[in-house]
Image (tube, rainbow, N blue to C red; front, side):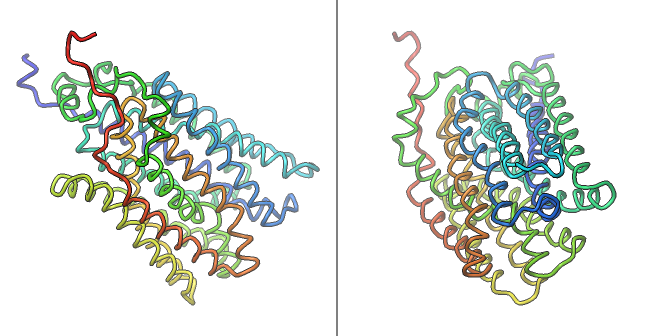
Length: 434
């Protein structure tokens, strides 16, 4: 059969979906400790600021290894790197539950294990972005990233009821072992399904290969030489993305670490009710991530990527600042939860813009570039984990959320210096040139 008469296959979307699943599992592994945190503090006699140090351990490991993780994905391919990462973080999730009761150095043990968990998870999104640069046409990257990061919201949304249910029946340690098994399963399936490039996959027809190649504007990223580090560190667009994502990460991580504890200790909800209300921001994240990706692609096609990527980024962060500020001032727990969930959803409207622009700019080095960008977000996350309870103790929890709202405003402004049409990759030489 002549492949030119055959419709393109759509296997790239199967892999996009599975990356979203792996991302959901990774967030299950990183958020589970916020649900078990109250139990852990009682069992090991830790204070909230000490628990904040444990929360920050993950983000420090995750942050420090973003660029190395991205470089490994560029160098060895996202298929192997993401598989090894999934197995790594499954092991250290299980080890978190293996810290013995009554150990004198409990804080050090938890900090070390969570740090190494962060090291393993650091490859997750730089690897997926490197894969996306090879597999997804430029015009589809908003939607693809929207689906991928919908997995973040889904994983975080289902974490509270899953972990709370297992904790009630079997204890908090069992919940971590279940998360570890899911991580191993997700990594093995990825290894079986994925390939680094479309032309390597037996289930992708030639029509889809041609469609993908034609739609990637940033040249043949799979065979191009990596960018020099000076091109990344010397770009105002990369630094603008990185700072904006720092502000984004500061706000987002409040929901991943302190929101459940805030609802149960400050707003007075019990374990079960608190776990359900904690789902709301993450459901909003999941839905708005996909909607933001659709919106970003649609606006880019009509008005160009400056409006479609940067404009949607400003919209999401600007709206998040309003919702987060208003939610912190609400009187009832239910009203506060709903408004703050709106802030989390608005924040995730901008999510796909970050990763689409980093793939467009980075090309063959999109793993390294997105690792640098994500390192900014994790720096913000690490600061949130430690600073939020300190601000809450001294000035109240309302002040903690207002500081996050302020960072949203700064992140929106940083989008204004980013040019999504800029290309950092060197231009290809004409055929036959030296």
